Amino acid sequence: MQICPIGTFYGDAVYKYDAPRQGRLFAGHPGRIVLNPGMNFETALRDLDGFERLWVIFQFHENAGWRPTTRPPVPPKGKDRVGTFASRSPYRPNPIGLSCVRLLKVEGLTLYVDEADLLNGTPVLDIKPYIPMADAFPDAKAGWVEEQERDLWTIETTPAFDERIQWLRENSPFDILSFVEIQLTRGPFDDTRRRLEIDDTAKTGVLAYRTFRVDFSYDELSRKIVLTSLRSGYTPEELYSPEDKYGDKKIHNEFIEKFR
View 1 (cartoon, one colour):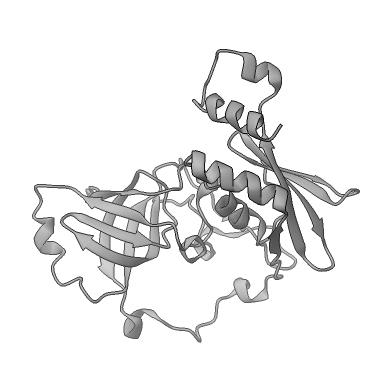
View 2 (cartoon, rainbow, N blue to C red):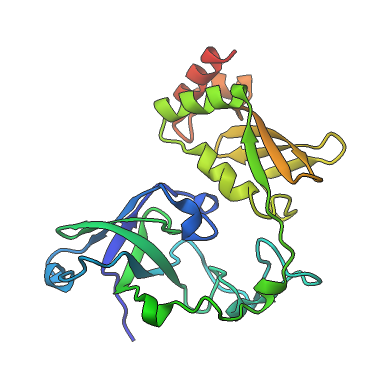
């Protein structure tokens, strides 16, 4: 069996930790699927007008190997792991994913979409129209998902955080607020997350986004997280060094100068 990509997805999520757990949680971050030329795909795209959603079959190109069980973001009550075939884990025997995206428009060989949980550069294997009559079963049982403990948190911000995030949004391609919402609104204190540090005594935490750090406080009773500040993750010594592995020290120096 030979399967070849028909195109590539391009979007805001670059690293695996940028990707949302479900595409609908990433609304407002349009991406595009660019199909390969010379394959008569222009004709294959005919008659997509009028469809609001598409099924996108893609390859998990950043994942190697598979695991028979997985730990979901919010585990079911009394369990730590579930079977891979009973999950949406990207580590599968065949690295194939399925995403229901919102179709915005089609121009030539480019499909503009939203609510996609794909990484930038993801190989696209196929595209099919979403048909509510055949694809929607709102009353279907969802197994352990229905039994899992709900762990939903609200996110609030302070003026200090808002000022910093607005400056960064205007001066860099980073979308830190979206990343924070994806990471902290559901099961925020999962101890398997290596980019999260929690102080249980002070009820505060630090979430790492690339080379930036987000400080927050939290209240378990109200299930509320308050984003208090945004700061550089570089030390003064690291910023002084000429080595610039990620090519972002210039923006960090300007950020520090602005908010010193």
